[in-house]
Length: 184
Figure 1 (cartoon, rainbow, N blue to C red):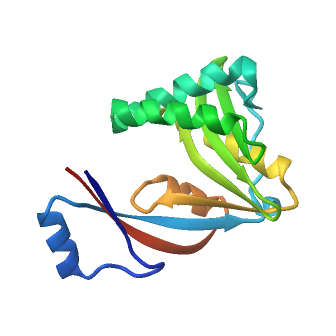
Figure 2: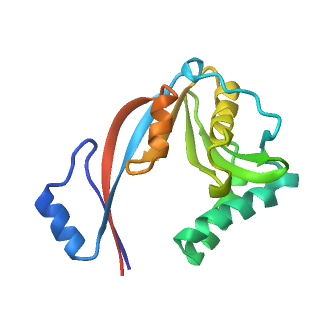
């Protein structure tokens, strides 16, 4: 059984409630929302070792395999369900899959959710052994170049170091939301 509690935007649970939830086997975390105009995104130094491309049939397996490798950290069941979700989203015109290669090897993935005025970067991930080489920045640059006429948003784990990168890249912080999860 899974229980998930989502708190109102910009409201932090009291310390007493946090202690109670934690003592009852719940995990507490928070996410942060960021936004940027593509023209405000810093210029990325061109790196011939990094190639970023939209996912089509020929590179779909590379995308799914790399996502599976990453998602497996959250359990095999989760990773398998995510494979099905990625395959379903692949045929959705409002969902673009993006894949980065580093020296010819799959290195990073990202989902892009497209609407008329906003584009959301979702599930941006770079293989741990290939981080800090500019791959995440090049993935974002792909979105900034493709959707110059829209606001770009993303959600970051409030406790993850990637949020510091987003702040350095001129994203504007919009708020936070706490979530509590219990898995029995």
